[in-house]
Amino acid sequence: MSVELAPAVAEALAAAGPVVALESTIITHGMPFPANLETARGVEDVVRSNGATPATIAVLDGRLCVGLDDAALERLAKAGSAGDVAKASRRDLPALVARRATAGTTVAATMYLAHLAGIVVFATGGIGGVHRGAEHTFDVSADLDELGSTPVAVVCAGAKSILDLPKTLEVLETRGVPVIGVGTDEFPAFFSRTSGLPVDHRVDSADELAAVLVEHRRLALRGGVLVANPIPVADALPAAEIDARIDEAVADAQRAGVTRKDVTPYLLGRINELTGGRSLTANIALVRNNAAFAARTAAALAALGD
Image 1 (cartoon, rainbow, N blue to C red):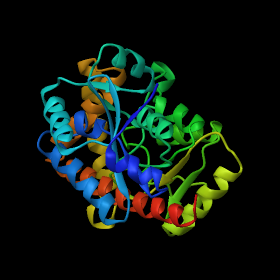
Image 2: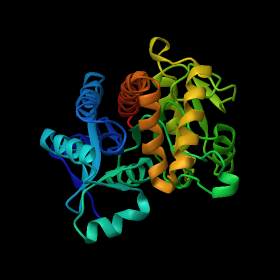
Image 3: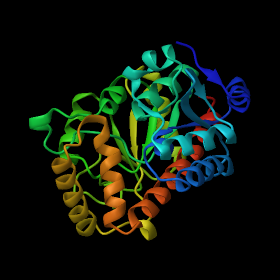
């Protein structure tokens, strides 16, 4: 399964320059229009302003695209808002390619396609994980297995706080995925900076993280690295407040019978309603913050010749 590189991405990779992969479900399933398009454009600009080339990844008419032009970003944003685009995890890629479909890629699919393209740093909002009540539903995101098998560094604001964070960290430990805190010893909880749960290791700069990633590669460890970068202080939501809204949203989802891959988009949308749009503002801020740190890390790796 081959990928189609945008010219700027192909040029940067050929020159061993810094490239940052970006997922597209945040465009198609994570935000309403036009906030999704504005965010996609803004995040790419943040990557560029921090010294790297952005490579937003998506499936367009069955083509596995690594790097999108502005027309493609707008197409995805409008299609996602209209509900006319699929949500693609890694398992969905063959079927989507075969029927020439269009889809936003999840963390798992984006990691896989980034690795095929030779991109080693990926910025997202938050990873999927173990859902609340998974002991009954067995609802565990494929993101965790991908992190355990694909050697890409994923810069995020932790796992989405709609999840069971202790169980998510336990699964990451079982999969052998190191969790590295950026300027923190505590695992961030997406909308808020703290969770009460420890990270495995801490770095305080992109240069420090790049050094860790170099050693990870030299040891030929088969999985990825989860980089937990807390939402900026000014944009964080109080943990008690957001937890209460999440509990409401989870209860609403259960009453509505929402299951499987529809759970996360439903919960994020419902939480946005319950917070009067504040969660969307926080989401945009944390994605931009992650993109900036990922770009600086990719640039540091390129400077090390790795």
